[in-house]
Length: 475
Ligand code: HEC
Image (cartoon, rainbow, N blue to C red; front, side, top):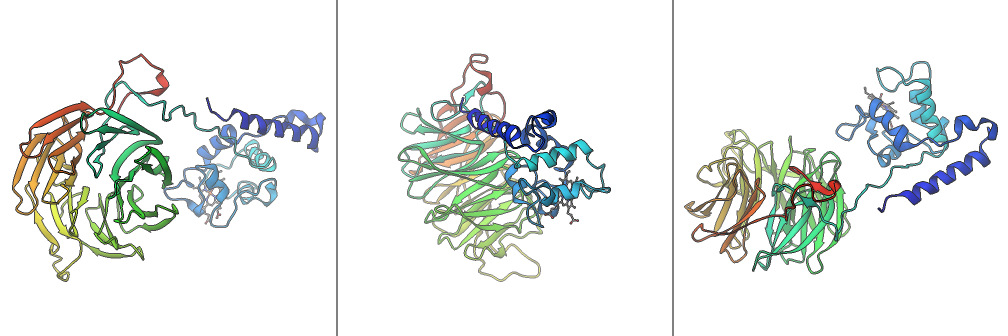
């Protein structure tokens, strides 16, 4: 185990030293102070019970977040809430003390003992003794599955040699010549929501995270299958990854209704776009990288300028009652965006407006609305030349269409329950589907014939392995 025992032991040692050697109370009063206040086991439970309700990342009162040590240390609107070693200089102590404490606001004050606990913790240096995540998973130690995980994302590499598939905490790479598993990329994020290769195929990008903990973007070097970097952003799983054409930027959607754009090199957040009114599931860049389009539950397709981060246009008509958008894809060579979702109709739009918006707000950017699918649309993808696109929907059907005239070219059973992701082989001859039942299916795009079906992950018989690593349900 690579848990933080040594670190903890050092802290403990330091504390004991301090109390024995430096405590003003000396040995006689050792009883009250013989062990240091633990942030992890004493302070955190108090924060959770009495403070977190109003000081959580979703809507932090006074800009103060208490759900992590780093956030608490960062302080709030008024600056530092705690000054290590100086309880009397700490705003937090001031607000929870006195005859009518201001915090917790309008609630039962903390008990004298609880206030004293905060005081002592700060006096002792306000240390973070949170143990490191117990984490035995890495390259050599993969998750073990007893039931199939839902497949949420699929992507062929641009050279067609590899099919990347989402698993639990890992991305699985399959050789497309024999569909054998050739690598497993294990990371920290529990959920893999979106996979995309850069155009040159050198980087495989992932957007996902661990629900209610962190969102994460991972960038993997496809030559070595090693993690280049994992960038955390927001406090929840993130969705709909896309790279700018030059791969210098990465965009993704968040459950906090924002779209974020990061620089790949500097890992800096360049844009936090907050003009959506619900979760954002998809992002795409324009062909020249000057703009991006984002969409999600609020039904709007929004156009945003990359340099300024400013909103440019609602691409689709917002008053048509189209329903939530689950997925979007950009045409490989044109500034056209295809979207699908709740109302089952794939719609293709021009990204840039050519006709001025009218009072009636008619759908002027719409190029074509296609045939309704048999279920809510969960995944869309273009073929490499853009002449065809595929849909995957709830109910398990996948279909292929001629982009230009809307002819349906193939219908396939892409999953027993629901298809969540579709991807064309770059040479256009094959379509991969993945979804609820955990199987990957490969279809011939010309005939719709099933060429191959295999489980997305190796499944172990139940009870055969260390329980801690067993993935037992939907991720
Ligand atoms: C019922 C809601 C609520 C609860 C519970 C609550 N707070 Fe607050 N807190 C607020 C509000 C609102 C503010 C902003 C104060 C203002 O503007 O008057 C605030 C501000 C603060 C600030 C000042 C932040 C700054 O920099 O301006 C601190 C420190 C603070 N709270 C600590 C706590 C602690 C510690 C607890 C738990 C013991 C707690 N709060 C519980 C509502 C709450």
